[in-house]
Image (cartoon, rainbow, N blue to C red; front, side, top):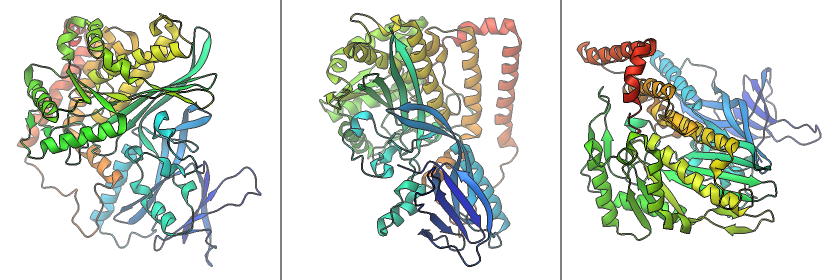
Length: 562
């Protein structure tokens, strides 16, 4: 268990973290950070010149990060409880503070001081992106993986490294704990980027817990046009695991897991003010080896693969689809089933019912795949033996719609098995629960989209209500305009924030400032500024004029999912 509350004592010499207990007789093991040299000690005696300057209560330690001024401590100052699962509270990080360890900045240049201000702003922005944690249970692993994890280990050792986002920031505490006989596991709190929502609900008079846990892989993390495709180790951009969880009143635990991720080829779209930047597929000699590594990892983690490619078979996307299919054929692995379902073509003219064609095509694989089920006595009844790996271009809007359809299909079988849903009944027949289901999946779509593209997802009016609406079309237009602006002008800084937080980029005070750039001539800004101005004017006209709304409504209903 990780300490839930800590008193932070600030003096001129040290930062001292002391766990808070209701029982004053419990011995408190303190963590002390020396402000002069940054050294760590446990239960260190007070310095001779100790003079307490400040005491604050914090709710966890995110970790330590080094900037030009030296080490900075990142602490959680506020949290929001998002639900409880198996008696364990899960929280969202909603407040934090970044505190420099060293007091003096006399050793810094003016440029370094300004750079550190920029770094802190970047970290502040990223930490508002949807981070979740629990003090008492591991939320980085699915229920199925948790069953095989040693629960006697500290949480940080139980955590799945792919989703342990602040492991880099905890590296010094981990190393200090491993190299000494001092156990600091109670201070090392894993935090996860993604989405968590857990609700108490009911269906046909039976209550149960229903939730979604979405875990973003920190390997190859980044923003939309700055992170595409695969790397040499087989990691792909926007790689996300989503687990749908049901816990019954009798203690049965059921889960269904899906993944999404960028097409595992070397490809990119460089932001260049165009609404759809040019698609470039690199002729990289390492392509197939990286492709093979990706699916080898997927199979090791999840079993057989049901690969659902939703991109267009015509237009600028089709070349990427052709290359994807070619490498699937070269892979020639019977454990990988590949389906190219052209979402836009098959569901044109608002024919969402045609998603049933996709379900029918993969029905044998879905039946064989199963789901995880552990009964109230702790016996594992069934396990999930494969996973649906879904992608579109961004792995956002089209992907989320299909994932919600697959999740509902699995949920029907799960609820029927535990006796909550009558035989031959549908999840949709429970009207109140169906609304809960739709809202959770739409909220998940928005959160994942904000983290990757900068805005909420498109077409969530369909996910929430089952049909397209005028208000939803207007919201899509607004989100698309904001995406365009952010992707072209702000995402570079957001992408750099990911790299800084994860240790992909480390601040080196001996090198020149990365923020120093040659100013571009005014002519290079004319087109972007003119484009943005045009979009803002068009948005104003669109939202202000009912006639314009009516005129554009039919067009907007057919706008692309990404």
